[in-house]
Length: 262
Image (cartoon, rainbow, N blue to C red; front, side, top):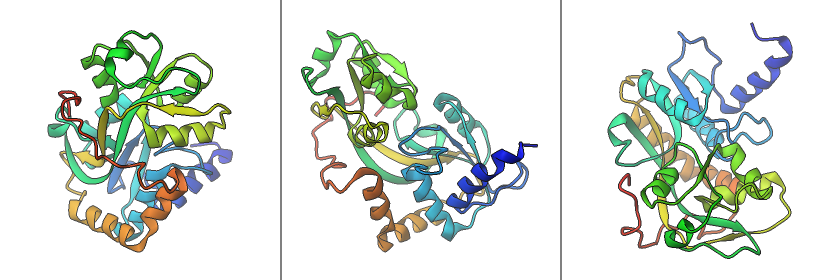
């Protein structure tokens, strides 16, 4: 049994998600997530964009859910192996395609090299190959891209990435611009970021185990459509990422630059 002092935090989290706290044998679906500040956080004050989006969707679906926060590679493995498991956000790539049921697409994000102001910008992989000290989130298509392009890198968790850049543990990071903007803001770092040319586009999805009879894909899509039609989705997007209409633009000619996994 959890110590009494821990109950309010977890109950608050699940009330925020509008989910029923269930035993392992009594849930409709189980979430496997990474505790990171942008999309899926344990934080009560800022639970993450997709935690709030899925919570709003579940007002309509009324699913009983249990949630597990794990390191990202482990979360992906458990989502594949566990019946009725759901994971988000997950980039849809060729390497992952056959491993999941792809429920609904949330949006696309542009990926680039990001440095602190004062350093030379990195606009291509050729320049990046000559550098040492580039950070990237472990277990992501961004990491696979750097591998494919033979760029030396340091693998970090989502929580570590922005602090490492702020503290000069890395000289640059390779990640999505909207995520970097929010992560930097949440960290309250004083220096400004500068962004290189977009080199990759990632489609972010909510996905499930292939063995998920309790996951009704149409219900999830209907719930997301209703959330968007009501304006609530845009309100949450603006809350986390601001109101720049170009921030999630994918009007880039990236075909020649995309890794084989895309």
